[in-house]
Amino acid sequence: KPSATGDAATGADELFGGLLAAGGGFDRGACLSRHESPRYYKRSPFSPSPYLLQKLRDYEARHRRCGPGTPGYAKSVEQLRSGHSSEVMECNYLVGLPYNGLGNRMLSLVASFLYALLTDRVFLVHFPDDFADHFCEPFPGGEGETATTWVLPPDFPVADLWRLGVHSNQSYGNLLAAKKITGDPARETPVSVPPCVYLHLAHDLRGDDERFYCNDDQLVLAKVNWLLLQSDLYFVPSLYAIPEFQDELRWMFPAKESVTHLLARYLLHPSNSVWGMVMRYHHSYLASAAEMIGVQIRMFSWASIPVDDMYKQVMACSSQERILPDTDGGDAPAPARTNASGGGATTAILVTSLQAEYYERLKGRYYEHAATASGAGGGRRWVGVFQPSHEEKQEMGKRAHNQKALAEIYLLSFADVLLTSGMSTFGYMSSALAGLRPAMLLTAFNHKVPRTPCVRAVSMEPCFHKPPPAAATCQGKLAVSENVTRHIKRCEDLAGGLKLF
Ligand code: GDP
Image (cartoon, rainbow, N blue to C red):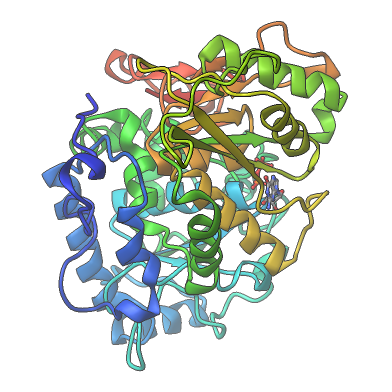
């Protein structure tokens, strides 16, 4: 259960209850957000379990021992270059290949890191150019001259990582189909399996790729020295269905809802370039407000509706879930002034959207009409509406565009209340980082305005948009225990998706 002891209540806890490693190994100046962000989040509803803390500290020791620049890394890379497998390697690796939009990439990083924790692997990430300088080194010892890193070194022997896809010969699904690997743990040894296997866990995966979610296949994959994992999805709910991982997951996350909230605050720290944008905007426009409401509006091309309809949906959602301040309709006399400066509380509404229209309309609304004060006392309520950027359309491959999006995800995560767009990974990341269950706008599937404007999310966990169909994928062997299904639900915003709660 969430406890009420947030940073606001306890004073900012620089280390998020021990989630971040204390002491040496970090250069403060190299990553300001790691030390400063705890002051800005309004809520920290879950404290990390002692088991999770131990897992993270063990992970950090493994990364120092096996990360790039260590003899263990050199040995594994050499083995990979030789093309042969060896009996048992001291260090095993998971290389994350996050792709698609920024929110997708962040979810993929979180899910892949959790998979590395569950399988005792070292987590390295391939950052394409448009994704460079977004995040700090997350592990102690990752900064400075002699440091190790989570960035996959450029001389990694598998060439053209960007070419990997559903058709690649070295994908687990294709190796199974070509009978180059059996998927039977009794028949495979570390020597019989390839030194490197590619896991295609993206939205276009096929039946054999989904064998990843089967227990026996996990026992086979455990024997592979290098796994390359490409994903744009939050596949964690299906890790819960794998018996091999269930105890660990239960011990790490006694509250299922806390997985992304805790792991994202542990792993993802905006780089100084991104944090600079976040801080400049926050202090210039938002910091003085008593309350901040985040509104994230995402119009997908495949679910587009007219701006008027979307604005109406936002307003209907707001009144259903009591999010935005009401207005008096504009003609009521202003209440008596309480003091010379006008008194009253200020509310900042932060709008993020690729378009400027919603911001313009909301700004007009609170300019033309007075907001009615909430609570007893009946003082005034001043409402400011802000939008950091309106990029007009989603751009692929542009670093500055992605950095702005990242800054906005973090600005939203400092909100007291959130209204987000369903199906949007951008929205999912903001909510999980904020520690809030958002009011989520339902998607206009088939371009039809949904009858119910929005729902309150059952948890702050992201939705897994492409879970494998339950039993068939593991030749009938997958037994999802009741214990697990009690904590996995269909997503509010996508009937075919799964989420933890
Ligand atoms: P999703 O498509 O909503 O799931 O979110 P993603 O983050 O994966 O992809 C959408 C991309 O469009 C983002 O990475 C941004 O580049 C851009 N984008 C979408 N909404 C916004 C927004 O509100 N602000 C900014 N700056 N960019 C946005």
